[in-house]
Image 1 (cartoon, rainbow, N blue to C red):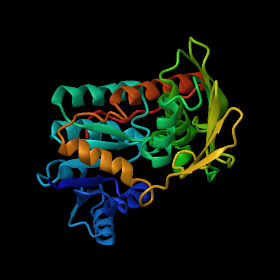
Image 2 (image 1 turned 180 degrees about the vertical axis):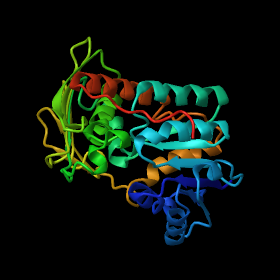
Image 3 (image 1 turned 30 degrees about the horizontal axis):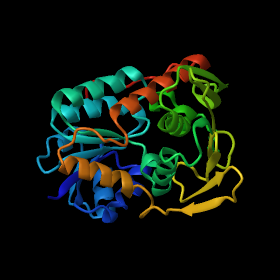
Length: 329
């Protein structure tokens, strides 16, 4: 079967993702939707998509679309996702999934109730190099994992009118950058028992950068740093009792990891991504949908909820008040 995809929100990230579909067997992009018919039409022409919709509702009502990729600003994910599920559409929702745990649970609960596939677009978990890292950890290559250390800085325009500094558009480091280190740590260590955060807010009330310490009852820890005001390598390290694995920059879409076993020379392992790296999550969704699955085993909804809970704790400790979007279109 061919799984028919629709794109909701023809922005910069959608333009990158859609170019990876030639690397996804059994998938075809058949429609795009924007609140601007002109934007949808231009995007469709640029990427050879047959149908352009001038509203989100129109693509939900399109019987020729099976799966929607939601790439609008974070606070809009809630209303679009809930409406899409009521219309019977499977979903790949761009990270951060929403901006509050309550909205994430709303979507997850409705997806489970309706038996419809939903997954967060956290491409890191599907990168071949990260998959290999997980295999090595599971095989005991570095012993028992005790610590994860990860950072991601991406210097952005400090203009207060920029999307990154707009609370209404889900601005700040947390939902665009810190979600990556938090999700990476949760992937390796599971859900933490404690969350501690320290950071800096902008005049508009969104976070510019933060350091986060995740604690586990058995003594394991994860440290994460993310920033909008400075560039950093974007590297991750997983430390175990018998060695460590370094995920070379940028860790959230790497091609190379380095395995160091205690007493041995480092082993460099390269696993390049197909296309720009988005293809792997698209393959996961396409295969899961075709097989009738309702969740991904690699990135189940429980993990997305756990990450959202951690981000909520960070936001609260920093004094942020995330502005969740409406529940209805």
